[in-house]
Image (cartoon, rainbow, N blue to C red; front, side, top):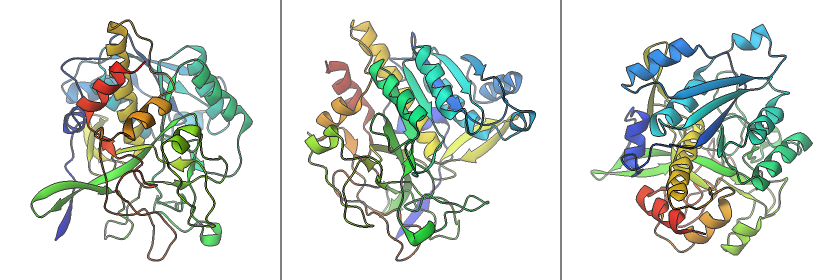
Length: 368
């Protein structure tokens, strides 16, 4: 018998679950960018929310593009609260900047602003189904890679279809095809997928996050094979060649890594009220925080920041031992809908799996 668990953990408890070195590193000297296309953040409210988590308010600033409308200012801020509270809890001594872009036209320019400011890590929890490469987005992400900046991106919360209705429930894509999320599919980013906790024979294990076939009717972790990008060298060198369930073609596989994402796994605060939340939007800042902590350790050793991390991470992951392998579940949004199954090793639902913090930190601290 299996039963899904929704622990409602605070960000620090999630990090402890994965063995992050929170007692050794605090993000000191690191600059972390959060891209936001949502509403205006009330900094006094945010300070109250950190107090509710029993955490001092980190050094947080906001840089907003000109042209953001009053309508956008009044939009929901839960997405940004999640990102900033995760990073602020795990990297309390980092400099955290929220880059607000005009929704949706200012997405790429908000990323480029963070690149121009030379942030060490950029966390992105926004995206949409692959349609066509956006030249300005492609340029911004290429610039990030060239400037030695790690970019973590949520892989989406709508399973293999990457489409949802107005209530956020995954629905079939046009043509009943499988799709991946963009810009998570861009080869210059670390794409972050989702898992859930399941109690099985008295033991907690992680499965692919998929609540679409349950009474909860929630989301599912995005993942699959890109239709826009070919197989990048770091996946080819690791022997990864997963065929698309649509037509058997190969391409950049999403996600690269994963973390807890089911709605109810995470507990954050908004307007001084606890809120159970989830989504791969939580996993991108989780991984951004881990990269920042490692960068702090590398700086202490006189080494450069990790920058584009996929090459190093894939080479190390292929040797084994750095990840909790997720071998159960799938990201299909309905019975017989095309999707991807979890398998031993790398797969198109959870990538390499979820982090074994101490081992990943040790390996990446030692990397050139």
